[in-house]
Length: 441
Ligand SMILES: Cc1cc2nc3c(=O)[nH]c(=O)nc-3n(C[C@H](O)[C@H](O)[C@H](O)COP(=O)(O)OP(=O)(O)OC[C@H]3O[C@@H](n4cnc5c(N)ncnc54)[C@H](O)[C@@H]3O)c2cc1C
Image (cartoon, rainbow, N blue to C red):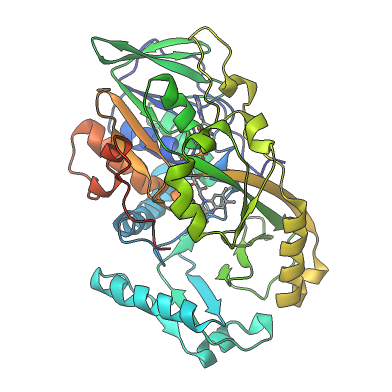
């Protein structure tokens, strides 16, 4: 079942040429095209289904610095500032608010890890407050139980996942770029060893620069070009309640369940980290690289079924430019939610915050979260394919840092001072198995 999502119109016709073609209308592709268009670059955004219909509308909407890996923290901080500006720039509300994120715990080792992160964050100017047992219990009184401690990150926030990315996509068109939904990119054309065009199902666009921001589809697309991109996805299930619960803050994490207030007044409920691993041909191919990450998360990952194989996003098949591709056969990656987990999630919500017994489940859906072996995205031009920029593998953190990632890609393409140091995201990692340490949080 798709997550709630605002509909936007596409541009009337596909251009014959563009300075830049961006493939993928998720948060990363949309913000890339948004910042390029605002700089006067001619840019076309291609989306095989609907803008934001995959991960970018299926997530919790957390835009957080709290507990970020050091490599991603600068991008998270810049992204919060950018999120704030999007509403002013577009004149439309993305639902972004610096509502603060609130964490509660009963576990001393979890609290110790948060305190360690707080000490590190202070060194880079990010403020976060550890809460004593008394403070945590007082702030978390909606749960009606005592807590050992907590954290409050006052400058973090959430955005409305049902409208934030579509609003930015309309901003692309307002700034002179174009947006093409129901238009899959099939492959890239190369001339004299560099990008010269993008073949779409509706014709070819001449261009010298392509950004591949296809989320969970990025590796199978790269495979067509002989680019090895180790990527795997896990199926995460999530639900939204009807409005009616008023006693909770906008965003609350506990290890058992997390709550996020939605734009419509309901809550998104999910169990952090819990997901199914559905084996696919691509996952088997890269299994060795993903062992450390999956091993670290063994408590929360459960074996899935053939769902992922059937969806086709992690195929190892190859296709010709005039073939109907897996991206056209599956316009929106919409896996089945794990109903056992949905029921468990709602039960936990009702146990922790009895007010949830008065509301019903309004929607439930799942999303494939695409990841790299070290949990940090890959952003940059791929060695040996001049003009081909890869931006994928956002590893469950991409919604919050989407604006910063898009800005960085626009900086790289236009030769501007990069908004953050691009080195942690280097594509040289694709060359060897030289992946760094797995992201800490
Ligand atoms: C349940 C869940 C909870 C999450 N919670 C959070 C959170 O709270 N905070 C956070 O920061 N992140 C969160 N994430 C992660 C976040 O949603 C993703 O990291 C982010 O949305 C990835 O954005 P993307 O643009 O890379 O990919 P996507 O949003 O998946 O977009 C990729 C798009 O590319 C299109 N596409 C692919 N191939 C082609 C092609 N060949 N031609 C045309 N179009 C193509 C697809 O149709 C798709 O729309 C969560 C994810 C899930 C699933």
